[in-house]
Image (cartoon, rainbow over all chains, first blue to last red; front, side, top):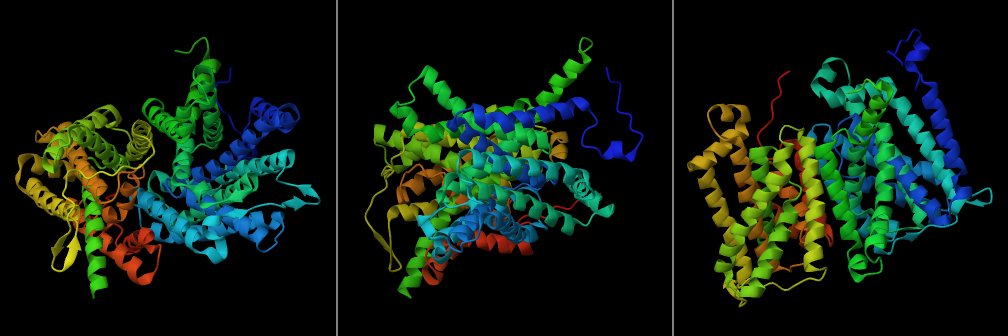
Length: 348
Length: 290
């Protein structure tokens, strides 16, 4: 039994994890995910791709809301900006996908300054409402700037090929998404341990105290907005590749709420939590479908008419239940289990 | 000139709806410090309940409201007891997120009960056009504006003179101190939710009578956020006035600047307002001591 964490060198202090067990399990998990497309069917691959995109988006939002404490209800807006940038650059300007995807992130980050700058004076709920306003404004710009976005017609996205490989097909998309997810997660883990990450946490815990200690609020809040939106923009670009068609209906308000639900039920501020939450919530619709398959009829008119309502109600109940019963989220549950396990049989 | 008058008139009508919904927001925010994201859903649910009452008993407007308001207050009380009270002492963010979750649930349930198709809902208001100063109005529009005027006056009087209203202001100013002088803070919270639900039902019925009773009624809740912010989240009267201002601004934008600006002009206005005054026009400034 480990009695504590004893660190003697700087390298140990800054290491992501000092536990061999953690590393080997992470390696095993990576290997499993890498091998998965050869074992499971096409449908499951699609599901996993959606889950991984959700992870990217959730990690991005988590930086803003979980780590820096700036509540955003405008996530759907940033996703839309990313998806539309990717689609417009690829389809209307003929950019290759390896260039248009980073561009989607950059444009999303620049647009986030539009919200970031006014929000510097705002706190808490006023900020939440400003970001909500931003999402509305983005939606309407997309709908009415037809010369740029094709308005309500949307854009079909195809021909994302790199060296002859179509990145929008099954396994290629899977590995692309997987690679980006791993990159984003590692980047996020590293940023959180850097000066920037610590400054963000200081702002979240008490912004005035952070300022007294020499954290430049203006700079670090803008960093949070930009880094978070860059990642969310990339997630948006991935969405456009996966569903092959961007339209304003894809980025409805419910998406922002879903994103918040993910990080709440995962555990605010924790990257592992964001990952768990994203997987949980992406698989939830499947669970609902299975439930109806077993206990009722999936083809019944009730299910087909109200599929969105049923999904919405489940999201709502999940949010409320977690906030009420386990505010630390899934990651808190995991910590409890781990503590129980490692202290057993002395646990109480 | 006629065009301007018409724009102003329809602006006042939609603004009155915003104002009523915003009053509901402000009432809850003032006494509990929570932005109730389920306010729009409360508006929608109570309007649908009223619709059922109306089509079952065929009441005229005032008896209909007499029946709807107590039911709405009961719903407000139940929601507060079941979902908000157990969260007491949790961070505000958590409580706000509970209302977000509640909003999605209420919306889903309402649509599941009453179906996705819109209804025509007259609410027992006569339909003959009335001329006021040369501008034609439907009676439902006048009822809406009248309701806002009456509720604003009543709200002002309630907060100014009644024991409960003064207690509510005390809770808003300092919850701990209010508790110490013997005010039951939990009862104030419950009353705030009940009154807010009552205002929501009035807003919902009159909105549905003016436009349509459709499953996207909840969206009006979000559309009234500009009014809430402009008025300052903790100012009940301010949000009523701000509702009218936003309604008129939206219609002027739509009429003179461009199509499709109606939906976002309010939001553009509040982004600007918040840049200049982060606490809204009439909201009280939060002073933090370190």
